[in-house]
Length: 540
Image (cartoon, rainbow, N blue to C red; front, side, top):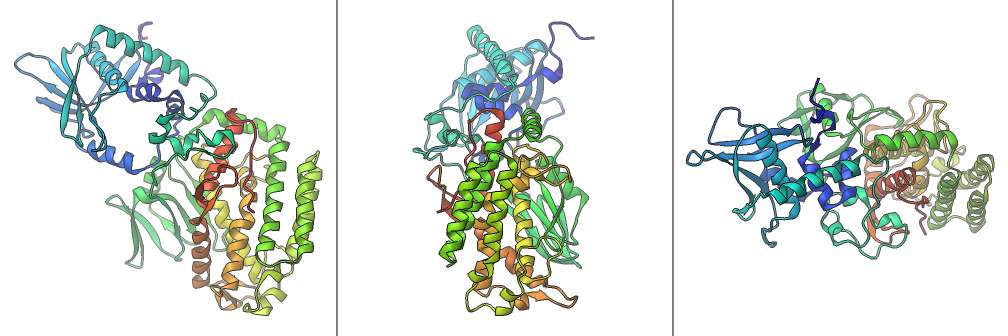
């Protein structure tokens, strides 16, 4: 039994969460549901500055680093960067390490003061005597003293209660509007404060480039392992590649690939997903950590999947068909087909049921793929176009469909990665049925990206002769990618994913890979009530 005035550890709030609340209540809520910060130069600099104090000191010493403390009455806990003991006074000095750009002055914020007060109160709750508190700015090599008075402690206690109220709510607080704090917030890329208004963004929030990338493992029989904080890829004793794990956003394994247990464990610990595909590009599964964010939003997602969100489904299908029309026009297709696709997109917008919506989508697919070979240039072997029987999914034996299927598999892997990053369940969709245990939501969200990403990349690869009949093996009567052909298609699609374009709603430039996650977060916003509607990407 515990004292009624004491808070259980499960209800205890970290010091850092209170500091987040003082900066922005929405940021604290995102942290509370495990929406962790992306790895950026700002975060990396802070991590590097804490490299020494993050190592706990276990023996008694004049200076102790990484000291874990808890205040059971106030209900807070956390780690103190450094505690110094003065033998002259017998009192402790609490030191908090902070990083600040060299061009900025080392100024102690109110959040710093409250965090030091909470640390002091936790030590005192354990019977220690604290005399001083300081903030050490590592980039300036300067210590700034902070006086912890009764008034400061009262403000800290009040901040704890306000934080507890904020994070206990089922929905996230509304994002800040035109607030300068957003410009320097490391959570801006997952919060998307201005984008929630679904209009042209007048003020671009510059989100630090995380420098992370999707790693594709394609060499049959290779093995990836963890060594010294790096992902090392080997085959038959030969080292094929090595990359710091901090630069890995996701790993996609194609075919017969082996990942060591240590690497999988580290990836799950960091919340980095691994997507497993067959040699044909079909997604067969994925692994992720056990603590994805936004648990409450997943319940809302399941409700939406059961009840249906017809307006969102119509927006997705209408955008998909409209994008097919644009790609068809860009690659020199006939105006009659373009007009038919535009009309089908309008029909999708006017659909009053899913049956009518699927009808518009089906008629568009028939018009689009019946003329798809006409988008190939004269430089392409005519047999490739002549062998195209129309759109065929699994079991395809012609070059075009094999390439499309592989590209769609890659796109599905990217969408699954983005869905998992938002903490949503890839299976509970609103357009595709979940009855056959398919990743329905991921299939829903990839629809608007099929033609701008995969169709355009496949056509470009054929027309530029990056891939051709020599990229396929016909030994078993049907087309199968050679190792070199598969590598070239992956390279083409990766280039497309890394290409920047102007977002048609927000008006700023971003990569297609980033756009996939932005759209997933827009769907999350519809679920949690942050925004009223979902707007798909329509290319022009």
